[in-house]
Amino acid sequence: MLTIVHVIVGAAIGKFVLSWPIALALAVGSHFVLDALPHADPGTLKPQSERGSMNLTDLVLASIDLAVAFGILLLLVGHPNYTASVFAGMVGGILPDVTSGGFHLFPTLKTPRPTAWLFRFHRGIQGTVDKKDWLQGSLVEFGVAVLSIILFLL
Image (cartoon, rainbow, N blue to C red; front, top):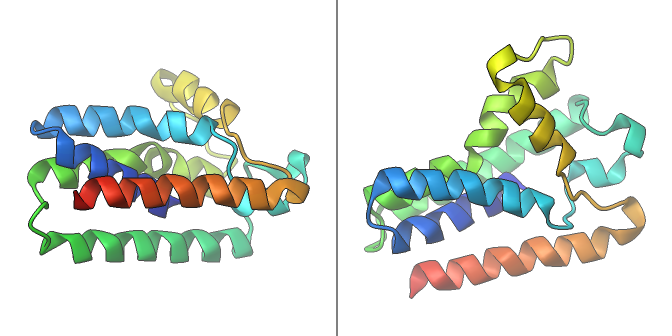
């Protein structure tokens, strides 16, 4: 799932949870739920055997995605619904990708033993659709993002 969607969902979670540590934890959990949904991301365009590794195109797309997500974070700072819980939710929403990102960029790195199970779990639940189903996957992401924006703005 795109970083943008994780950030928007995390913001919505943070709006409704007044405790920032709880918002952070729930947003981290939401990350795995969202990744398990059928979705389109740069991996959609790759054969199954190449998913999980990154090339220059993936890095550029991920950088754009992260830049837009950071822009959303900055835009929300001035919003009346913005609180520490919203910020914690947005950070928690992307935390699993941030912590595993280095292992995608540098596949020869060894996953630290205490987190190896989490990395394998995260990689194994991905609901990335195949190229032929890109529209279905994109609609799921779009729907989740729109619903989360509406919830945040309520």
